[in-house]
Image (cartoon, rainbow, N blue to C red; front, side):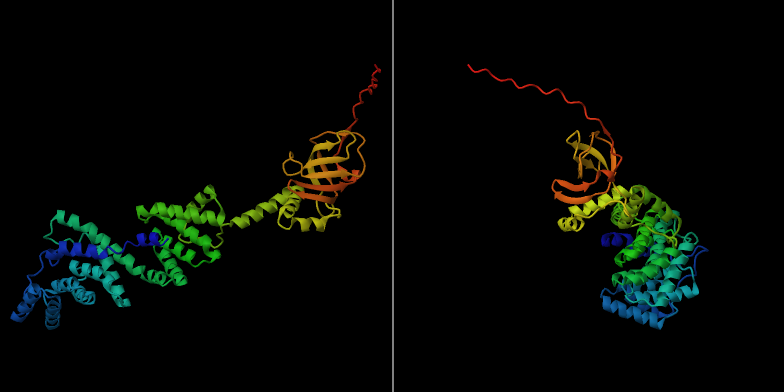
Amino acid sequence: MHKILEGLKGIAAIAAFGVFVLTVTAPYGHAQAAGQAPQKKVKDQGEYDLYNSVVKETDTAKKLQYLNQWVEKYPDSDYQEEQARFYDQLNQPAKAIEVAQRILAKDAKNLIALTVMCTDIQKLPNATPDQLANAQKAAQTLLDNLDSLKPANVSDDAWKQARPSLETLAKATIDWIVGKPAREAMEKKDYPAAETALTKLVQQFPDNGQYAYQLGSALVSEKDPNKYPEAIYEIARALEVGGLPAQNRPQVEAYLTKIYNAYHGPDDEDLKKLRQMAKASPLPPADFKIETSAEIATRKEAEFQKSNPALAMWMGFRKQLTDTGGDQYFQSMKGTLVGGGQLPKFKGTLVEAKPACRSKELLVAISDAKNPEVTIKLDMALKGKPAAGQELQWQGVPTDFSKDPFMLTMTVEEGMIEGLQTEPCAAGAPAKKAITKKKQ
């Protein structure tokens, strides 16, 4: 799951986009769409010298020292765009953002300043709420005004090359900022806090599958079984609303199937229905529930007991007898009349009668109608011949038990067997006379 989450972030490329965009737009940033901006001029010889010192200096520390002097002495320089860019190049994000803010105070749609704000906010280790808010505002301004921000002296081909990266930069910046609280909570393994933050994001950005997946992952990480259904719902939604990188979809598909099967049991049709439901709403409805595999087994057992009480009773007996304590369980029921009363009577299919005529034992199958599981010992022999295959119901007293092969022996009075029918025994062949050999 961790690898998938890392793949979903898509944030680390912001700096790379910023470098690309600043490189492409730097020569033109001061020329706005409305026309060529006024010619830039240095204030005096002192500013000219500081500008040249920053440009020519190769030592990073000295370069930064000259740049700070330039910004401090000439806060209203015509070259604030260059100052912001130099701070960005020297990895001074706070300073770069500060200068960019000054530019935006005068020109809210300055392309260089907007780009610097987006590029440098992620570099700040502890950005303040104001810095985050200003950077998000800048990213949104950039996103909303991409076409109108094209500098007049930038060719259409150059802008066509830069525009997608600007759009990606703006969207990624917004995503990084709004996702910061949830991301930090996940990194600290504060999963309840991550759940709260991500729930807000899922509601605010319902078409963002990454937020849905991250919420599902946070819920799973809380290890609260009561939250697993919502986690499964959100992971399913992530696959339905879009936004997941294509390379991550197979992993998320496999993960969804794995956790759904573990919780509910394999059920492709129900999982398809769940995915369609998840597509309709960012959060599951209040009465949303997914049955656990244990709940399904309990429900089916109750339905089975209701529809076939006799077989259900027998399955319970057999399970107890074949378990580890089967011998002790048999001793507890030995000599006691079972079946009937508040319990249903035993029900099974006659497989064989011993002897075939005037039988005293009946071998009966219960579970599958073929394999004998109970030997009924009658208190008196039958008067006729019972046919195999007929269904019997009875009460009886357990007297003996074998676990392997399985066989429960019960003593049953003839009057306690229902459904037993016999036919007259066939007349026996005449007895043959013995032949005595003559002595030689």
